[in-house]
Length: 499
Ligand code: UD1
Ligand code: CA
Image 1 (cartoon, rainbow, N blue to C red):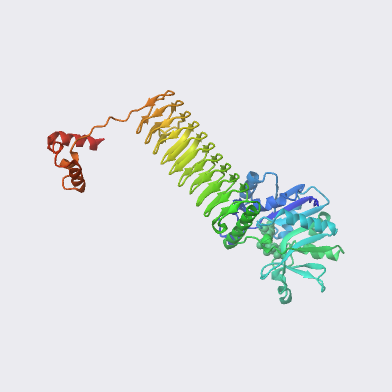
Image 2: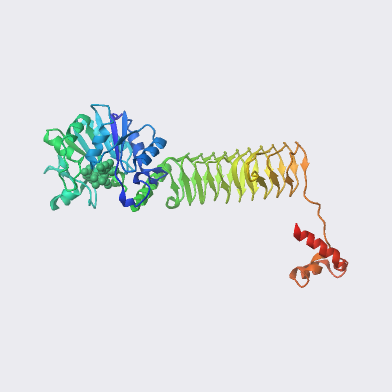
């Protein structure tokens, strides 16, 4: 059944959050790759409200800037000097143009709340034509929470008493106010105008709206949720970690239920916005962050961290780290490689072990198998980059691009000094320092011709194991090398050392 959309949602986030002991405002702390506030706003948006207002005060500008960046559609309301949740909602209502309908109130520091729960709240509230419907929960330790006061038979909600204002008898009540409500907008506006600050904390209590509505003869109801974690707020860093772990547990469960294999949930961390296709396999020790997107039948891990990275179908990423990279279908990466922003590995391409890449487009079937750095480059289809090749892209002032064509064979231990272009089907010898363009089909070599100084070890490393090994290999029949003139050998050695 379609649930009705509320006229407005007001998210309260004006509090200081002092128990976080942080320079960062509480609602900007993150779990699951998003701030607490963006989690709260996302849940609110999920109900499809006509208006969405966030009430701010503490670090107002910083939080407003965060909202502008991550949730541009929300309206910011500013709470004034009057403290309390009642005042916060009143300030929020000043930004709501509707005059009737249902208003939801939620908190910016309650990150596990889900749209489905809010929709159920709206449905129950409107179905009962209630003035207020409060979301409650029964908890083992209700310390600090407002307690739900019910009629003797428990069928009616009479009001809410705050912990600090409660009698001993009321403190024994284990049904608590989550702080999440559905209100009739007109009732809310009216009742807030009649709330005082005559209580233990000298604040305007939103909870007073319930008893006011009831004394006006309006219906006040409760929806009880068994999911305590869903309505729990973050007050300190211990709770931040606990709710972070719980959110992760729920995220992993959602993926497993939709067909993703996660071998070890206890060492796997997946942010809320990550998407993973069916039959992907996540091995132990994997962290998937941001907007990472894993294709079907891809295998990630073990021990791999991917941020904002797209992995194609059937690809394999082993013990590697990638940020803002694209890994094509059936490509392989790792172990021990680092793919930096702008890496785009084509279908069936390979980035092997101990390779760093940045801003590099590596074509379909192209390979960078061992110990290389590829930066600011384009590598064509089917090309192989020899082991230990460095793309020297930075001259200390500017960065330059390197283009390597299709089906090129770059030898081992090359330095490709950008800007250069190596044409299709070309090749380079081992140890080449490529400083000039290589035409298609050419072989480029510039390694220094090799000279062997016979018997050098026998003369210069006498008494070492190397000398003994050399002598044994040379045997008694070849003594000529050891008898070479000493001056020539010394010069050769000097020349070698100066290089
Ligand atoms: C409030 C409820 C309490 C409930 C509890 C659930 C009241 C009077 N009490 O407690 O019944 O069990 O939440 O967590 O409503 N906020 C503002 N402006 C303010 C004060 C608070 O925006 O002036 C925001 C805070 O940022 C926070 C939320 O409201 O997101 C709750 O504030 P907090 O002080 O944690 O709750 P309590 O008032 O102690
Ligand atoms: Ca609180």
